[in-house]
Length: 294
Length: 272
Image (cartoon, rainbow over all chains, first blue to last red):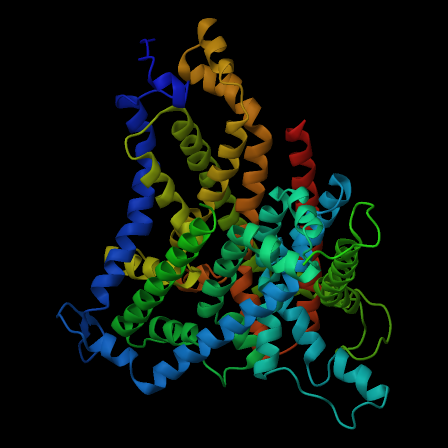
């Protein structure tokens, strides 16, 4: 064993400077990340500037056409709709999830663990199955419609499924746990004395909430927004099942370009734009999180 | 500015009111989260094809799953993919976590960020980029491509779980083992791995569940023969409701609950 210089002992006492073996052993993981994350993204980027030949095969001939096509009103509308649905979903998830996360974080450890477990179960249950559960309820001959019919509230079977409202319900239901868990993470760390101090200094519940609690839990809120908003934009499975295929989302468009022998370079361009949106949203969330914690 | 509060007992009444409101709200949200799943499980035993009325108890839909060649094949595919994915993720994730803990690499921070990318990146982008990659490399879509894709987003979860456990590990353990004459490899295998076991197992459960449930990435990276259960269920649900899907979903829900409870139990063990 070689002796370590004493200065390095201060920050991380037992970590060694890697020699050959340290790098050799880490190499497979690094290679995996490069090969299956970075290289595919690079190829996608190259694809997005390519054209197609008559048979639909990708030809490496530089063009901006795919990106221009994204700004076609048809696709702009679809993109706008996807972002709108995602934003609405995020907002509803935040409103529904925040009080839950806060409440769980304020409980005794025993109760807290049980409540947390109740959030973990839907979190780990396949979103596809949870979406299907709602389909059986909202269908025209489903449970909700049947109950309302037999109660005499509605005269004819109610078809909520395959409407935008159903799509939003499905999205909220799928992503709600992803909002609750990170906010819980922040709320749990929050010192209760700060909240009580705010109250003692004359802040009512609303002011204590908006001026003390929310800023202190912002990192969790930002993480939650990111975890819901970004995947919701690209989600096509839930909107397909609940909203019907009548309202295509940006995810449907990307999916069609690649699966149904569509225009792959155009799909790649959409994918790149989506990635850029993700990076911007991520950076914004990070920055906002840092600025509130000087 | 100062409001005279009526009771100076802690906690203050305004906060108590807020807490009560949040408690009621939490209960309602849990009803929202669980009612659909509950209905799904209950109605999977319903004789009627429709979900409106309860007509009688039956196991018919469960038996029909067992006879459905397409579903059984997809289930088999899912289990194959999830098993290999879990195995590879555990090896790569545990080794990675240990190495990053043990050594101070020059680009540690960059490596750590890179590891997080497949966890947080939108699934559709991961799926599409891998599809393009496999096409360029000339790899035919099948089991291998699905497994490669799944490992890419699963192993970081194992790595992060193991990393969390490593932070609480007494560093003198390895030194003691080496002082007693163990080689670094032996010390890792005999001392470190047993300490990490709860984290490794819960990471493995995570990887397995993620792989079993993954739809979006699988849609882009699987071929006809390697379609997994979620892709088949998605296809069936698109056509419409099907009591067999209720039964299948109920099986999935119960399995997931068992997994979560088991993983929670492990966490309690490792916290001790």
